[in-house]
Image (cartoon, one colour):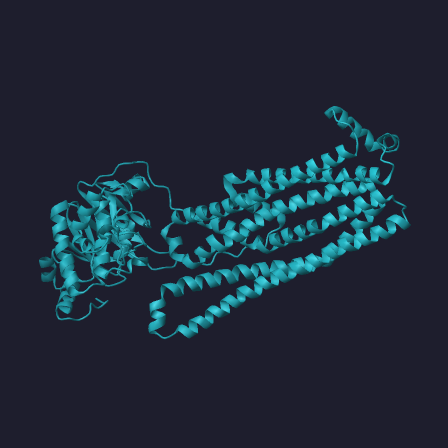
Length: 614
């Protein structure tokens, strides 16, 4: 699925987007900013006291004489009197040390707080994105690329967090610049205005670099997505790649995608470095000019020139921090905008609200009446007026050519998809009346290809019912025909399954997954093509296990069957062709009809493949 590409946002839009991504956690950005302000204030006062210290060292060291000539000495005198300490060189030195020590402590806490906030933001973005995706409807999930989503919730989440927290750094740097601007203005307004003019000229010089960084930032987002999607697809198809002997071609393609990422990353670093060099050079130029013009033209005293020079030199790391923060915002703003657009798309694609009834029990049947469904505007209907009844406590088999609509019917029962027309009822009550939890508690589903995570066997069986006891797990495994082979494993139920159940055969995975469905306690079991990928012996054993399960649990079982030998003992067999029910009855009744079911049984009995045609 290709989400609309967002335009590179402004700083204001990034702030708005950042608040949207942070959700309830956005106020912590304000606290980080206040902590940054406190750090700057204590640093400024700590450095400001350097001026009276320098004046005492340069002069006679007599505070009384200084009090007669310098206005701010009066404020120092008021402060020391209030604290009950003498106003002398030692007091000023100690005060400066205390203020700078407090500044260092605040700087430490600010650094740690920003790091913690950044990681928390990344965590919140990932969790929120994963939550939104799980709540989207099946149509959206069909269109979404798993590799793209994985990239968005990992790489893009990190870069978006970088942009959001760079705003705090930028705000801190701007406040610090304004703060020291006032200091310089007090010391010498002529020098201050000259410095501002030079810095403004420097900003104009680096503006083209910032514009190029925006372009590269957009390019980097696309390169990261492309590489992540490629990796996700190819890692899952490593077996095919090796058998097709395409290793070298795929490696070459990965190199191209990695090169595209590297080129963008290097370009971003290059533009940032150029901007930093320009800005730092300007600050150094201002410092050198200060030494000359401050003494020869303005006749400033040495203490004033010295403190002004210290403040300007202090602006070197400030300028560097400004450049880095601004570069991070410009470069990472596309990621922030992209995530906001993604989240909004997922919110708009959320599953519809279900009903309010919290309890659903199946006593008589599940019925589909005149059900019509299509996968989107312009598509032919996948289901065309379907009428089917699934009796409670019985086994119903859905058979027919591939693409006939069997799996679509199955998706409608737990409302993974909603019909365009018609009605689905449980004991006569519309399924729209029940809550999502109630309806899906009624039904347990096993897919054609078992979706097995890298868990232990016990953990997989408990998936959906974590509180299941060991006895319940073992009984479910017995009913599913899995207990015998599980008991022979070295670690038995604590055996790790491996990614996608790679350590088990196809039939073993089917049984383990069926045990998961059984232990859930659901009244309705849906088995989608349970024997499509197993050998004849496994198919026979599975068919026998189904018969035993029917008699042992009296559950309602719906089987989507490809191999008709698995479902010939069903209480009801429904043939679905081209979105319509064309036949319905028992195996014996359908054989007598001489329709598609009869021809399919003869083909399979003679060893031919089931043809997807009428």
